[in-house]
Length: 120
Length: 227
Image (cartoon, rainbow over all chains, first blue to last red; front, side):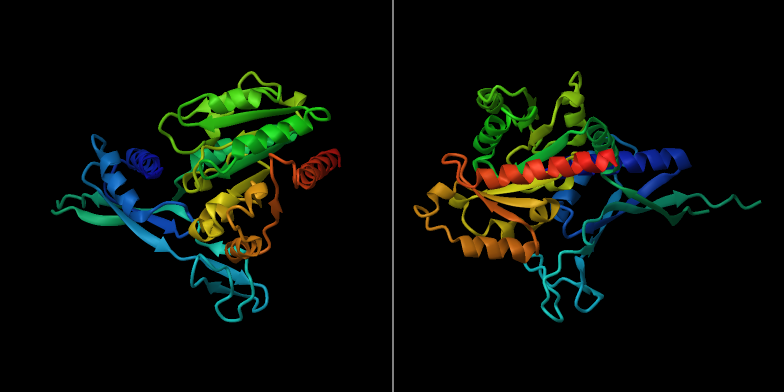
C-alpha cells in the first residue's frame, strides 16, 4: 500500500505549480496506467487525506485510467491488450512484450479558478 | 464577476523525484563499474537465503556488498553478515518498498569503486516496489515453488518491471506438486521472452547458471565502459 505516498507526491507537485502560477486549484487530472502499480480507489481515498491542511484541501482528483497498449511485431501495429494476464496480440495471438502505453503515473492538467478581469 | 474554471496543461511524472535520484545513482554505479542487482518478491520466498548463498559463492572471486530493506527488524542483515560481505540494513518502518533516495543515503560513506557487485534486497512485497526505479542494472523477481504457479498472473505489474524471473526452493518442488511448465507459461503470458532461472539456495542447484549470468553481465558492463 504505497498510495498514500503517491498521493502526497501528487499534492506536493500540484502545490508547487499552484504557487508558481499564483492560482487556486480545484482539481488535479491524473493519467493512471493499468501497469503503474497504483490502485485507483486506494489512491482516491488517500488523496483526500493528503490534501488535509494544504492549499489543495477540498480539491478533487480526476483519474483517467489508461489501458495497456502493446506493439505487435507480426501485425507491425499497436494493439490494446485485452487482459494484463495475457500479453498477446488480440488480433493474431503473437506474444508481445513491448509496452507502448499503460505505465503512466502522470499529472496532466490542473483545473484552476481564475478571476476574470474586473469590468471597468 | 464569477470566477471561471480553467484547465491548464501540466504533464509531470508523479515519481519524477525518485527517477531523478535513480538516474544519478545509475550514473554513479556506471562510473564506479559496479553491477547492481535488486531482488523483489513476496515475503518468505527465500530472498535472504538466496542472497546469502549468492554472496558466499561470489566472495572468493569478487568484491560484493548488499543493502537490505526490511520493515522493522535487522534479522536479514545479521543473516547476510554470515557471508562476511559488507551488509547494511535499510529499515523502512511502515514503508512497504525501497525508494532511490533510501538507497542513496544508505550508500553514504561507501566507496563504490571497491565493489564488483552490489545487491539490493527490497522489502517483501510484489506490489509497491514495481513503481520505484532504484538505479539497478538488473531486477530479479523471485517466486518460490511453495507459493504456487499463479503468482505471475496475480502480479503482472511487478513481472513487467523486472528483467529476470527466478524460481526458488526447487528442492521442495515435488513435495508441493509444483508444475514447472505451468509456472513458466504463466511468466511468459505476462512477460513474453522473460528469462527464467530455477534454483535452490539450499542444495545449490541452478546457482552456477545464475552466477554465470551475473559474471557475464559484469564483464559486458566493464567492456562497454572501456570502449
